[in-house]
Image 1 (cartoon, rainbow, N blue to C red):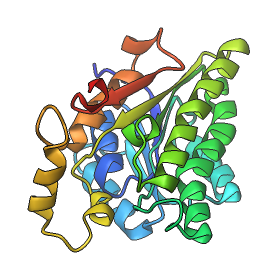
Image 2: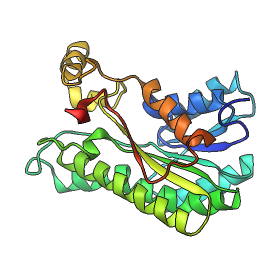
Image 3: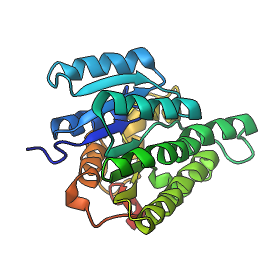
Amino acid sequence: MGRVAGRIALVTGAAQGLGLAIATRLLEQGARVVMTDINADGVRAQAARLGQDHPGQVVGLAQDVTDEQRWQEIVRETTEIFGGLHILVNNAGIGFTGTVEETRYEDWQRLHRIDLDSVFLGCKHAIPLMRASGGGSIINISSIAGIIAGHNFAAYNSAKAAVRHLSKSVALGCARDGSNIRCNSVHPVFIDTPILDDIVGAADREAALAKLGRQIPLGRVGEPDDVAWAVVYLASEESKFITGAELKIDGGISAM
């Protein structure tokens, strides 16, 4: 039996990077998984690929996580396909650099819609289904940038810090109403995923990753599975007494 056997999971931003790694590990540990992404072809292709080893256990759906109506549809489709929901992983996100002066207001708004508003919408519309399914676990992917600020991450720092605190509010609300739903945030440092391309820019990628790694006490950037296994833990009953917490996956950088 897997660590999340019999559970139904919804993972956003699952066409690549962290979302794909998370969906893969949840599947391997026994969950049935709905993978969503704005990249409709990409997420369906990945779900079809994973479905070869897990027939009938995974589906890929198109989703713009900033669209509230689509969130309502995704929750309804999850019910129709698998009959409930126990695990929500709010992973979809973007990132870019810029000081507060350099950041255009429209870019600030777009990042907050994708990185923060989507988490609000996901929690808001998934909680009733999770409650009806007997409870479960919400894992919101924040960032170490939500705890440690940088001079040129104004919008990203803001959104990811808000995800951290929103997760605590959701956790307390669900604890108060007895819904048996836990909510925690995960805070990775630099992870080798496509989102780093926006930070690296035109620089040599390997050289840039090495440079980023030198900022981290363990001397390297993280791998997607470093985050995926943490999500499996928070999704499982192994963490049944953990809620309103933040799990740092940062190679020790926050200890400095």
